[in-house]
Length: 421
Image (tube, rainbow, N blue to C red; front, side, top):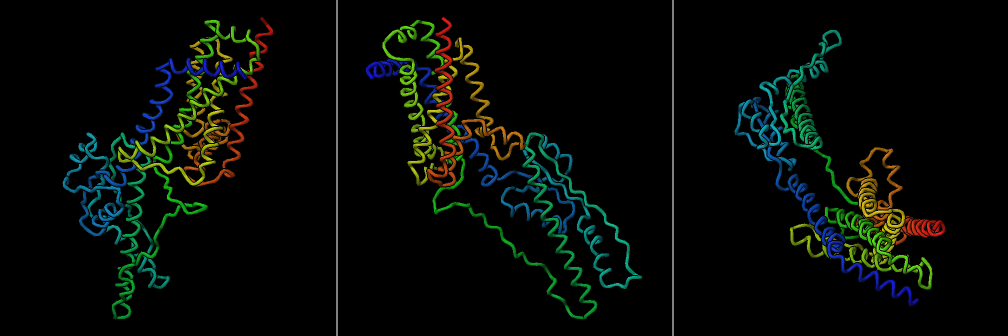
C-alpha cells in the first residue's frame, strides 16, 4: 500500500509538471466542443433562422410561378429574391457565391400544365370511341446551384419544388374538373374549386418518460468530444511510460518491493482521475460556457448515477488503451503517431465524426469494435434518450472488459520482456 501511495504521488508530480500535456488534456477539448458546436449550431441556424438566399426568375407570371415562390417562402428555409430577371446575370451571381441557388421558371409553364391536364378530364366525360390519346409535355424548371453547396441542400430545393408543383397540378386539375361539371350540370361545382390540405405533420421525440431534453447540437457534441478527449490521454500516458524507461526510473521502480501491478495501479488511479476531471470540465462547459455563445444549455438527464458510471468506465477504457500503447511502443515517435492516429480511426468508426446510422451497412457492423462507440452510446442513453443505468449496462460492461483486456495484455507483455532480459 505504501508503494502504491508513493507511486501515485510520483505520477501526479510528473503529470502536473507537463504543462503542454495538461493543455492538450483539458483546454483543447473544451475549445473543440465550443468551436464544433458553434459551427454545427450556426449551420442549423443558417437553414432554420437566417435562411438561404435564392434567386427566382419567374418567366411564367401565372399560377405555377407565383405558387412556387409562395411555396419556397412558406417552407421557411429560403429567402426569395426576384429582383434579377436575366438568366445570364443570375448565373453570374450564383457562380460568385452571392446566392446559393437560382430557380428559373420557363414562360408558359402554367399553360403546359393546363394542356396536359385538360385531355385527362375530357376523357373522363367522353365515350370510349372519342377518347383522346394522352401526350404530355414536360416543363423544364432550371435550377442553378453554387458548386460549393452540399448535395443535401440541392435535394432540399428540388424536393420543395416538386412538392409545390404537384400541388399546383392538382389545383389546376380540380379547377378544370369544376368547369367540366359546370358545363354538364349548368350549375357551378364549388366543391372542386380547390382541394383542402388535411394532413399536418407533427414531430414528437420518443422518450420513455417526460423530460426537458432536446436533441440539439450541445446534447450531441458534449458526449462525443468528451469521449474523444478521454482517449487522447493515450499520448501523455504512453509518453510518460516511455520517458520512464529511457531515464531508468521505471527499472528502479521494479527493484523496489512490490509487483508491476502496483506500477500499473498507480498510473490507472492518476490518469483515471484526469479523465474524470476532463469529463467534469466538458459538462461545465456545456452548462455554463456554451450558453455564453448563444448555444443551447446542456441537460444531463435524470439518472446521474448512470452518467457517473459511464464516465468512470469510459475513463478506465481510455487509460487501459493508453497503458497498452505505452507498454508496446518503443519510442516517443511510435507512441505519438500510433496513439493519435489510432484514436482518430476509432473515433471515426465510433461515430464521433460521422453518425454511425449514416454509414454504409458494412461500416455500421465494424463500428461495434470501437470502445469510443460504446462510451458514446452510453452517454447518448443519458444525454439524448433520458435513459437509466439499465439501458447503458451493455456498453458499460464492454468498456470495463476492454480495460481488463488491455491491462492484462500490458502486464503479460511487460512480464515476457523482463523474462527475455
